Amino acid sequence: MVRFDAPRLVGPTPQAGRMLERIESHGKHVEMVWDDNVVLHTHLRMTGSWHIYRQGEQWHRPYQQVAVAIEVDGWVAVCFNAPTVETYRLPDKRRHPGMGRLGPDLCQPGTDLGEVVNLLLSYRDGAAQIGEVLLDQRVMSGVGNVHRCEVLWAQELSPFARVDALSEHDAVGIVNTAATMLRANLVRSNRYAVASVGSGVAVYGRNGQQCHRCGETINSQPLGQHGRILYWCRGCQNHLSPPQAARSDDTPMDPHPAAQLYLASLPWNR
Image 1 (cartoon, one colour):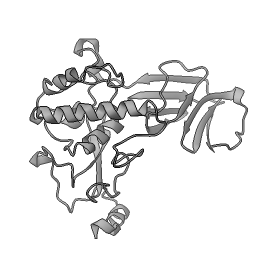
Image 2 (spheres, helix red, strand yellow):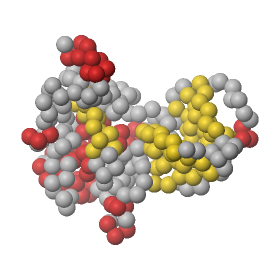
Image 3 (spheres, rainbow, N blue to C red):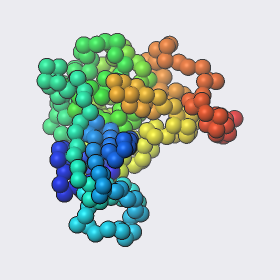
């Protein structure tokens, strides 16, 4: 997302640079979920409606009727005349005051990254998977689902690795890479991955496509408390990969016959 506008919004404002991951409708209720667990709820009732326009296209209704406008590259989604426009965060027991304060903010240049490394290495649940721990805001604040996937790919680290298996070298690499990506996004309107990929993403949202590094097919599956979709490359993200994380090469990512035909036709799978 590059811009968010809601004149009568109640709740925290979704931030530019975040990835809109999911949209759900329940009758006239529409919920949009960003990668940092912010949810936009609009209740359309009898007057509201959502429109999709290409960038620069004339809107069918005047700006005075806009309840929400969400702009991404080339497109804008506009909600007109919705009586209810509010945001909230998905419940996460780890954010409860009794569970501990938020960890250091990696977006801030003055953050002590050594403290973050120590928090990662001393994580109290040693059996937890690093793919889940990176979303624990008590360890490092600001890492969402997109950066979780990109950091692990950049470090060639299995998302299923136990956190207590990390060496100090591993932890330093994770923290430094996450801080670099997050701070780069503060001055960019698009997602930043690593230098070899440029201003795009290496694995996030690229399931079924070819890995930039090794040519293997990108995998995806739900992981963690909220079932956030994890994207990773099984071909080159094998550092500290536990045996139980390995899956047979003939197990399709998607059981649908069309998906199997598509994946089988990819040049690097022939």
